[in-house]
Length: 266
Image 1 (cartoon, rainbow, N blue to C red):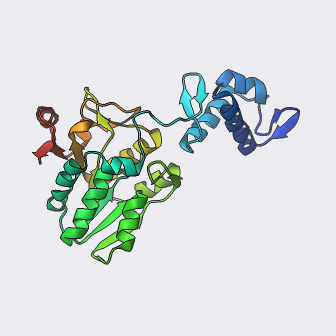
Image 2 (tube, rainbow, N blue to C red):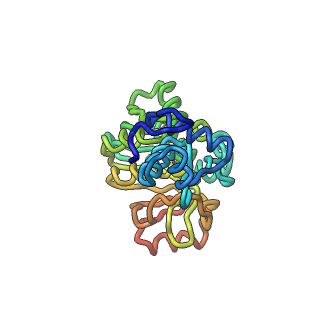
Image 3 (cartoon, rainbow, N blue to C red):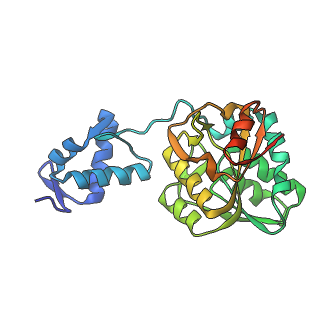
C-alpha cells in the first residue's frame, strides 16, 4: 500500500527527497511519466500527480499529459533587459498616459512587464502620490533608489525568476492575494485571436491572474507587437480588463472595444 515514506532503490524516501529524485530524473531524461513514477517509488497516481503539481508550482517541472517535462524557456520569451529595448517608443507613449489613470493616494499593482516599468517611471516623474505593489525587481530597484517618497513601495516576494527579474510562485501569489488595489498596470506577451490574454510562463501568468482578481480595475498596456501573438499560458479573458491603452494597434483597437473594454489609442 502506498505511503508517505516510499521506497526508491531499496531505501525509504520522504516526499521532499522523492521530489528531488524526480527532478534529477527530469534533468537526466528530459521527461517522466506518472506510470513510471508509480513503479519507481511505489506511490499512487494521485501522489505522483501531486508531486508534479508541486514541482511545477516551484518552477522545476512543466506538466504534460500523463507526466511532466523539464521546464524550458519559451521560444517567445526574452530577458527583461532585451524586452526593455523592444518597441521602446511605443511603451514610452503608453507609459506617458499612465499618470492620467491613477488618482492621488490610490494603490496600484504593477506586474513584471517592461511596459509596467515604464509606467511606474512616469508615475514617479509626474509626482503622483500612490502606493505601488509589485513583484518586479527592476521596479523595486527603481523606487528604492528614487528620492520620490510620494510613491510608497510594497514588494511582493517569492521565488526569483532571473530571466524576467521577477518573483513568482505560491509565496508571490499569496502576497498578492493578501492585498487589494485600486488599479493594476500590466501587459502580456500576447492577445490571442480569441480574445485571451497570454504569457510565456505559467508562473508569470498565475501572478498576473491573481493581480487582476485583486484589483478594482485592470489597466492593460498594449503595443502593436502583442496582437495575434499567443503565449504558452492563458491568463484571463479580455473581458477581465477595464481599460486598455493601445499603441500602434491599428484595427485591433476596435476589436478590444467590442469586448466591452474602454480603449484609448496613444
